[in-house]
Image (cartoon, rainbow, N blue to C red; front, side, top):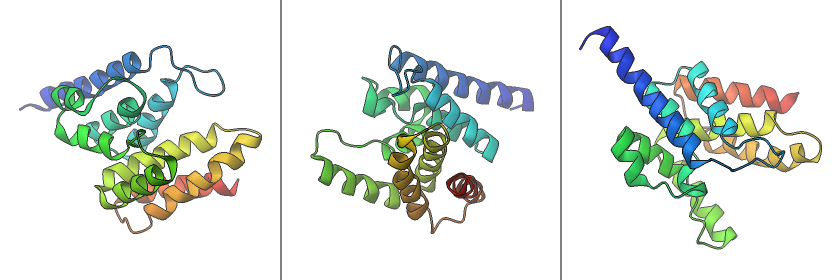
Amino acid sequence: MSTNQMALENWNLVTTAAAMSAQAHEGQQRHDGSPYVQHPARVAVLLARAGADPRLIAAGFLHDVIEDSTVDWDEIAEALGGDVANWVAVMTKDMRLPEEIREARYRKQLEAGPWQGRAVKLADQIDNYTNASGAAIEKVRPKAQWALEISAGDDEPLILCLRAQLEEALTL
């Protein structure tokens, strides 16, 4: 496969994920009233800037779709491959469970899952923290610190880059 073909394939993967995210989050808003899709787009950009490959960037675009829409693992796997679907699934809480059980299970699945899931979580928390203001900052700070805790044992360069960004944001 030529370099141009690979670049086009990578571009198609990312744009497919972006379009799927936009459709899944259509009409949803963040707490500040902004369109929800801006959040996964920023997460994808943070991952790209940290050196993520196109599949991980795609997972960044889709990290909330299973939890917040009707899109499921099968749809993601069919459109973007099993790795992307698995990384999104690691980022997905089982909202059917009571909060106490759900949060404990979520932490375990992120800790035990592939490092790519923790990378997405770090980018997610960087975006949540840096876009919070006022009282919301204190609400998201523990979640950001939690993301640092669960990724403390990772030595992937991309994780180290994202950890440094989140640590810096927390000190500002």
